Amino acid sequence: MLATLIRLLRLASIVSCLIVAGSFIVFAADQTKNASGQQQEEIASGNPVTRANVSSTKHENSFHKGLDEASNTLTSPFAGVISGSSSEWLTRGVELLLALVVYGFLVGYLARMLAVRL
Image (cartoon, rainbow, N blue to C red):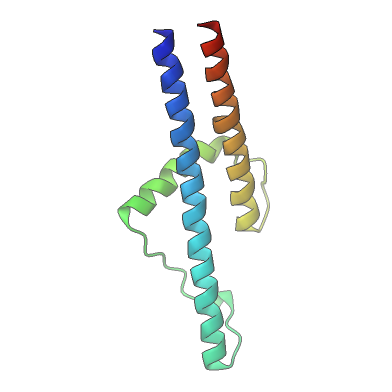
């Protein structure tokens, strides 16, 4: 019974970390792609493009939406840590680090402690 709980904790720890890290990687890739497109548009038009002129529609597939929803659920306990920050990079980065510490390190540590007691 305890061995099953330990395996379940380890699996939950790994899956949680993969979800949060995957969501951050997709976010970073999207931001990089959008920044590159904005720079190309500025060069082509010769005029600086402001955020108001850039379309903010997201073309997400169902996997991307599901990954973001799962990540938002996992990082929701940390949402108040960086309240009021205007930088989405800072907010997502801090949430990623906190999630990796809690779900990766602490839950993994708990599983190891339970394994020692077995």
